[in-house]
Image (cartoon, rainbow, N blue to C red; front, top):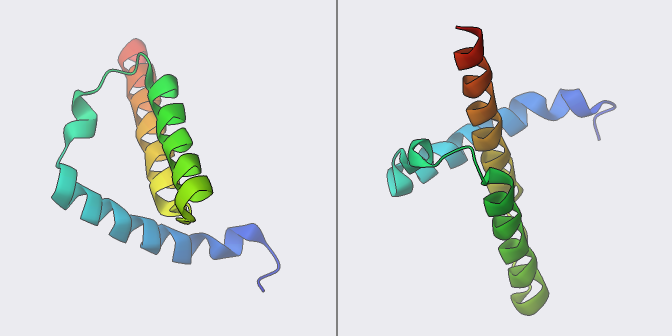
Length: 86
């Protein structure tokens, strides 16, 4: 086990990159067409679906998809901040 969480970041980043590439092949850039408004509710809904799948079918949570959803929300917020600055 590595002694610090940050030491896992390169491996996690590579795995997340691969997941995002797979998601882009499947979904394209549809994430760009969603508004920032309501993103928390949409994200919580996705998380509840993961929870239901785990509780009812023993399907493990795909943490890379969770991170991908978080990244999408973060990017939208960053882009909104950038628009306000410019």
